[in-house]
Image 1 (tube, rainbow, N blue to C red):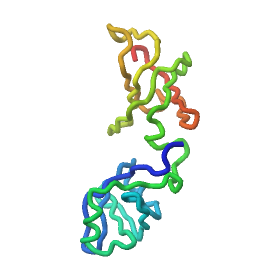
Image 2: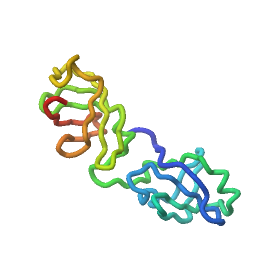
Image 3: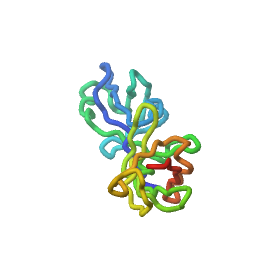
Image 4: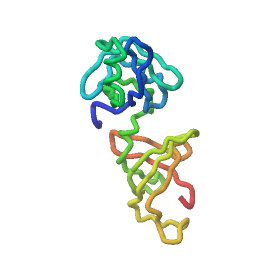
Length: 175
């Protein structure tokens, strides 16, 4: 399933004088990144000495980074995690594994399109689906819109199956 290494954040600054780095996480919660024993920066595995959250960021001390000067060299770098070390709750998956999946209308079993993007909104995620279906659409004057927005909530998402390559959805009339 997908790439072994996943982008998980960016190093935005140093923290303190002992060489800690400040990571802006690209995860659901900053706490997720504190559960790893190592991170990958510029293709290099770096072992974590300590990691904690602070004001929505992750403050991390890395083995071999002992001062501000060496930590500054990492600033702006992208932080990757090894998907094999990640522990996800049942029913959870990485966003990257959803992009490109077929979206299937649960009622008709017709493919509506492919997941092109996922919008991270305060209330819930929204799947942006580029349409490929031929189903009639009474909600628009010119036929099918090029994309539909589907809230990622149980009322709309019936089944997510990245391994099989699809998401089954229930649509409201006019979507």
